Image 1 (cartoon, rainbow, N blue to C red):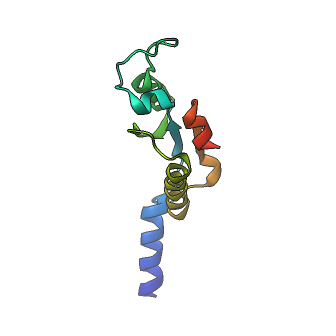
Image 2 (cartoon, rainbow, N blue to C red):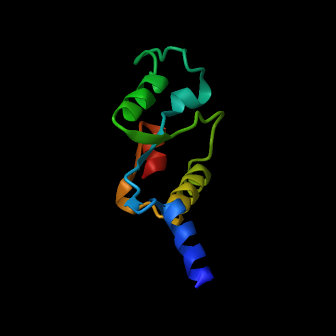
Length: 114
């Protein structure tokens, strides 16, 4: 009986908010290659500033939990994608429904997202 109660408490605290299903929605945002090789405030010669922080802020204002990191250097897309898959698998193992996880990207980030 004690083991069942303990499992119930762990299950409730990690997956549910004490009896209420976790309504968190997650978005992985993968930026373009230009930002991978330049600073946040540098201007792209054709498209201007990337507005990375502003994009993340808009997602957060919409109530999404944003998972994003500025990649540095010429990152291997396949290796980076494998890391994203691991993070997604970790969320699913914690009880987040796959339909509550979105992956988006621009340019090279879109390629990685695929």
